[in-house]
Image (cartoon, rainbow, N blue to C red; front, side):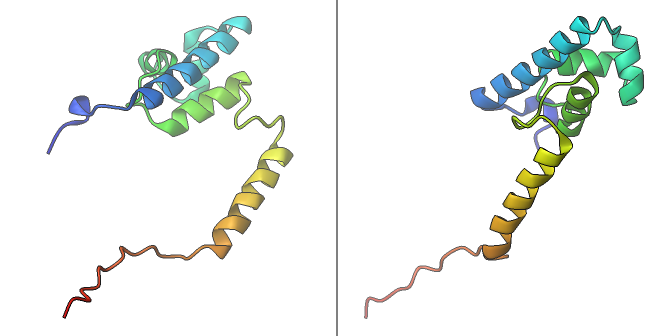
Length: 112
């Protein structure tokens, strides 16, 4: 089994994590917040914060979101929690009408 270090990521994934990491760094610097303070508020090490700010895709996505919220980066193009809840409700409504299971289609052998 390959180790996480051997994992390769698509360019779009790498660009997305890099963008979010740089937005976190930008907001932290604009607020003049030291790395140690932000890392402490998020409950992570300074080293992990540095990895996230560089866009390391191996870091947990939840940490990216936690840091983004702490420094004020807008997520999903919404300005407040009410808008986020509205979008979440819409997605839940759409998911409710879709099948709960998706099965692989079975190829029917119709040649006699």
